[in-house]
Image (cartoon, rainbow, N blue to C red; front, side):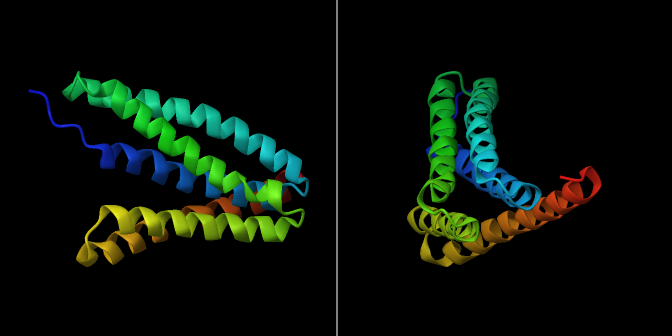
Length: 157
């Protein structure tokens, strides 16, 4: 039996995974490397490959239950992932100062989470979903920051 296409789920999958993985990656690389070019190049490569991977994974997942909308779901997921990544990488092209770029990344991530939840959820569910996504993203970024510190210490970077 085919299910109705749920664009919100496809967008959440791409957007949320991009925020979680890329803010975590940026935080970890920020600590490990002083050179912002390394951070930017690593994030661009990761963003492109991960958006293709997320799109392909969602295609296969949706195809298993709904053959008609699998390509559409893949496009929504990959597009949401790549758009989110582009917005998160953008501060490194705008600010020369590394700290300003990093702070801007987190502000953009919070704004994306806020705007997404504002658009997709009713008032009574908005804050619940907003805080849940924010806590998950923040937790992953803190863990990645710690991993970056460990990498810097143990690998002598």
